[in-house]
Length: 509
Image (tube, rainbow, N blue to C red; front, side, top):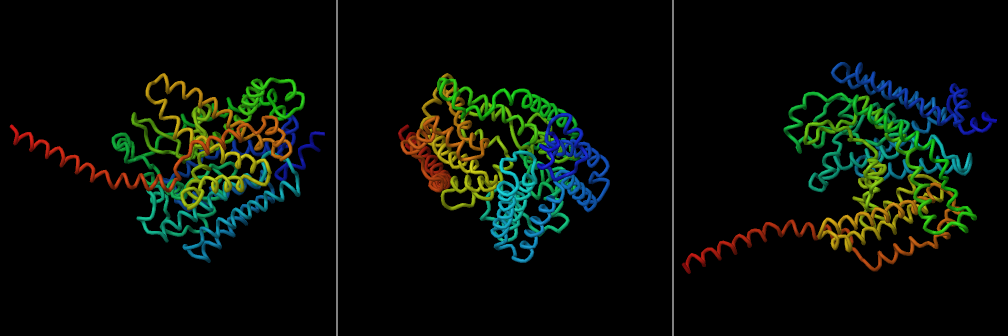
């Protein structure tokens, strides 16, 4: 029975089938975890024996790429060829179309190919298969391809004065070679679970040029100057992140089945449970779904750190930071007091990608465009679109609350504490309400949940967004720029006025 349940969902190696049957987990998930653990061990050897001081970037690129392809084949079998096809198609576009328009074409092709694979997997092969599937790595590769092409466009087509400070750091001045391109997209450290990183950061890691990847190097000259000759050992940080992984996995395996999300739409539960208890259960059921993401993303971060990738300079007290490509901050997520704070600390590298590719470049309705792009990137399940469409109105309401209400609570620490407690509770419930369709996946169950809540959060957010308007983003940016231009003039007038008053007083005396 176990074999019949597991085997259709896995296209990779069946070598670990006995282990899958013993621990009663799908084979594809077992393959994924074992490959990640093997990648962790390999990462230590990569850092020690293929360090940039001991070998050439060419060798490091080749080894990282071949190992990545091997792990992909072990987990996904021939479906891993999609990684090569997607990367090869977009590289051809980059070479043939030139830097002026290639970022647009590559965005359409990479996202279109990803969507095609997601649609066929969901509606042709196995609707509802929510486990380690081949489109997961393709999502990360899509981010890397599109980020790379936009950064090449910034570095080789746009003038420097047209770029934001962050775009100047990430801009790429030359076309990557085919080996560099595949190494960036498919290296063994990030092929299975990411995280996404910038091309410049990855090349700096491969070539051993830390001055390019320590972005905060100038912000703390004393600490960084003291340690700038060599990166510190990541061993302590890797152990800390592995402990977080173990704890997250134990919590998920022990608690997740106690609070199933599906109970939120159970008829008996809705009919017999008071509304306040439904709210509490919603929070607990969604809370227990997060540790699996904590496990996967923290383990992926630890693998990169073990290879020596992810060092981000030093703190003010001289402690090393290994958060350059970290994907989450658990404490900030669980204690977030605003929708924005939650999103800024959840799937961080994806948030950076959406901001750089869409939000900063979209001239109209960047918030809506960003959520729609995020929904398309996540996949073909209708629940994803319900989640991100709901996220638009929740974001607008949260922004309106923060701009209009928060200033009234900053007068004293006690008022600020009251505001933080209320907004923490509101944020957590809003997040849970928003992402229920993301877990349920289908339209019917998702709408049943929203009807049981009488669409209360939707209605409340729309009313808040209308009653508490916020100036459009482009107007706020103009005001900020105007303030920056007027600051020297006002300062000069103020000093002139002061000098005039002093002269008058001197004459009077």
